[in-house]
Length: 220
Image (cartoon, rainbow, N blue to C red; front, side):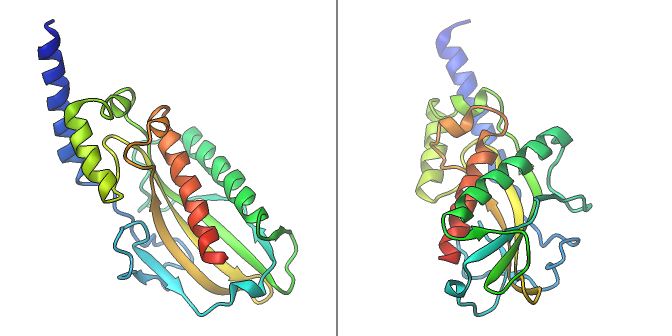
């Protein structure tokens, strides 16, 4: 096949994917999360990364210990895993547990017992999208893909055919069991993060890393 024809074909495929990519997965206030009744649309979040939130006035500096519960894989009918396998869900949940624990350990003492000055954090994995094999990486180099990804990078949007992760965060005062903060978030890598485009769960994992950093920014 003539190379120019092949490249034009790939470009058309990329453009088609770009159009499809505009209809991205939008998180919902998952009905079976305990905090769903408290959360409301977060109008201050222009990025769309945190569409729903519940918050109360909190002095985070008053807390120096944290209980990190095992990550829950959401089973409600309004989950957003599409056809992702149970094995991939479990793998992603395990990665979340490890990465959030690592980040939290830099600021808090991780404990197992309720006590004063202790937070309790529950993470609920509610959805995820895997990378599109091969084409996700090629779209970073194809001209049509480069244009689309360039626009997305400028607006901190999702890259073409790139995976993502969606999860809920619920933060309690461990001593009183009072819910003090909760939100649903969608996280994904930068549109030109080539490393995050290689491997089915690479982008979702990169999203987990970003989300852990965002949580720490809130708690510091």
